Length: 316
Image (cartoon, rainbow, N blue to C red; front, side):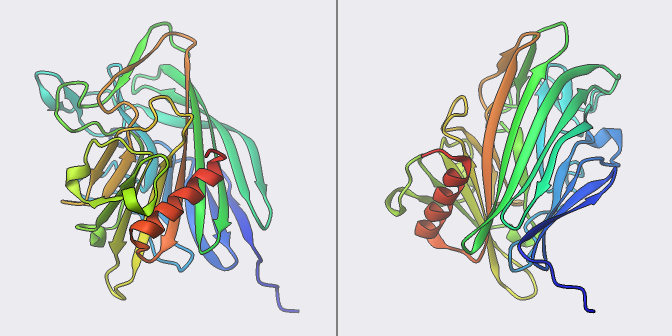
């Protein structure tokens, strides 16, 4: 007999390497939880490739300009004296300096791996280990994948706890003195062909009337959500990525790190301009939704997709 085609969502576990999620016969994402990166690139789990329901890729892996950029990844560049982003560290009065401080986020155990036609859920424990081998944080991370109308959504949550014996400040190059460079958080790097694409941003209760359409000038704005629409080489189709900051996140609406040129990227950046200091035993929890859609929906459509993201997070 012919093997039946898969229906709905399904999860494929490549043991000790990665998880793949597909919808029917279309691959949606690969989550590499045991990366093989060099220490310089701060090895940490990442989502790549990420594709629309139509099969178009919306992430980039190891671009030559920043080889530590990996699809969609939880990445923080200034964690006390350590770097959990990769590459050089920005230091006040020195600029970017390559130091022996590129830590990594190491998978420890799975808490949950479940899948049915309507939802895939993954939860696991991680340790944040410095280049010298010290464990500074433990993390409980989870993500859900659901298909919503003509798009699909990734709900991402993290709770990380200081298990060291000292206070640790989490910041960014901007908190170290570099203007308008507050990156750090759930960072998305888009395909090369998305360069020069459209950036959408709106307030927590955004409607089509208050959506901002722009580009690099939106760097550092505060908004409840941000989206990026870009065009693919070859066939010329468009795709859209919408990232939603949960209303219960500290500092909501967050500041955003975004570029349309010289490359496409976006990141809700909770430490953009203000450090968060975590004493031993302190925890910080954050949640986001990423909605992936075929096409360019325009301002009203982008706001609608952001509403979908809020619904996935269970917030108004």
